[in-house]
Image (cartoon, rainbow, N blue to C red; front, side, top):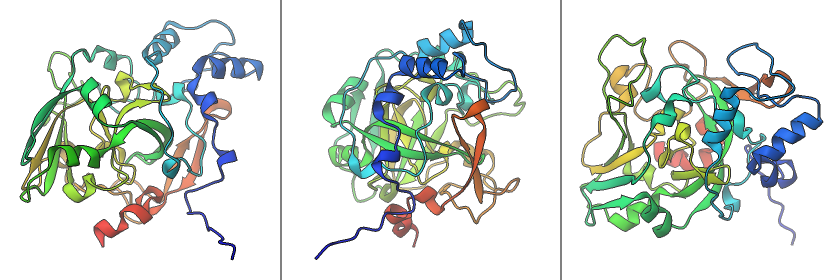
Length: 332
């Protein structure tokens, strides 16, 4: 008997996925653009200025330097390798970021280079049998790393597809052994008021440091991931180096960056955006296309493409960002 597998809504065939050799080698990508007559400069996403055909601006040189990081050679997890869109180009993903610790616009990648990542440590504490403080190298060595290609959906109704490198969160759960009282997990980001100055336009007090949280069942889900790399190398600072959360069925603000502390708790922790405005930013923050944001619809999204002029492609938003088969049971 021949078994016919019906692909999920978010899957496509492997020959439609951007080959790793293309998105890993940024210099080869730029040469490809030049050969196609598009030009060497990446066009700004937030403006209408045209890039020049020859030469590099200081900004472009700085961007390339921020992405020129040690390679991580890992195998791709085939279970998480298929999405229905091309992988977003590294240069675009590397200069269009939300990172509120460094400002409120999308071009905070340069300010984020102030982040000190040397001798990074992550404290795992709270209701666990094996509390421990990990060096970032400890995490990379203790937990086998893999690549996963995930959709990324921002609450602002734009999206990307990104090739993360890291390890499943449940591996850390198994290592530290939470007690029966642990029901939630809090994730705290690096904060130094001299470095992470936040947005200059915000006049009120802000609930620093940036914190996020999950129910422990969410953290134990197969999708939940800690990223230490992206595009075949270490995680750049603008992406939340050296350790960030990746929960692809939730809006992007749930992915705390530059994590320094993970605490297992009995009660739901306060989180940054939910503290600022609980009406607009829910604690769960699952991608729900039929539940509009108070100020815009979530039924569609602007997928950041690599076409002429870096135009947006309007796409239908899927429940749980297309990952319902993995997580819907958590919210039944």
